[in-house]
Length: 458
Image (cartoon, rainbow, N blue to C red; front, side, top):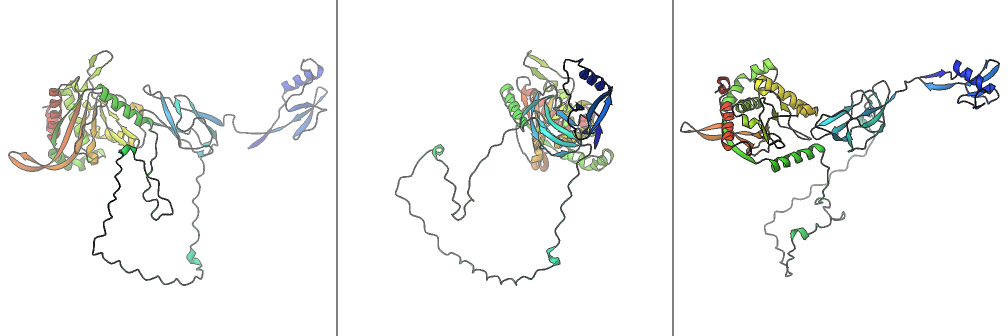
């Protein structure tokens, strides 16, 4: 909306009168937008008489939008353990955005932070290039506010059906008769003669790939070989760095066992309907393993401890925070379920579902993944039969779950087919001896095979 505003006030009148009388060293210099009567006439001007002085006052057309209609959006503050990140733009200059619409994502070492638009408007400038590194408080982009959400484009109407006015077309030509079927060969094809020239015995590394087949040749493009490179995102770089640090720092050793899942499957099948009705969520196997791990960690506190390499001390934790590995399209994340020792099955299932949903929506905060005293990785959801997980530093152990398969086992001197799962415990042998590791894994086995062990504290 345009409005007309005057550019002369009472104070300006006094100042101009002083200029005219020569009381100011600036003399009769003109001011922007204001001139004496002998000056030229301007569009939207008006003559005013002040103290026997005739002034020519110009008017200007100005917008009525507030002066801060263009705002600069800065990088949000990171957690203490994160100092910088890389920008991935979702919008471009000139794009219209609505309030709270994501403009860009900042990939950090642990997660991605979404930066929404603070208001509806149009993006005027991107102050950081795509892939640029930013810190907390760095200006990201400028936004011109419009005060209303951008209107969504209506889908284009479908063109009228061609069948409404059929054009006269010639009758289609009769299709040619199918070619006769190829005769079935009754003899072997001739073997090409062996060349008398010596065979070139170059090493594999010295053999260069042949040039691509020209387009003129039949079948061109079917055997084209190519490759492309994609830059590793910060999360993948951090995952690689931490896994290599774990291999270089910890003396990792893995012990194995197998668990009969018959009882836990029967319990789940018997109570899953009532559990779903009361708690509005499904009963899975992960809560049983998390609760069994908390029970075993209380029995073997050294597995819940960690070595402080700076002070050369062993830090024993009186709380149990279990990290649950979750696979996402961006990489592996390990949100933490805190104070598991005080939770029941329903509390654990609810916490895992909430963290898993946030991970899939890329809404995990740094605080959701900080800490953790023990990790559980479930490769069985992908069909893994066996594996040795790598410790999640600075923890001292990790439990690997695997797929459930029916296998014949000896039960009471008889062979029976039972649903069995292999489990693996990788631990830091600098701190945990083999005896403690084996006892710890057997505690988990006993608690999962017979959940009454948890109730009786056996």
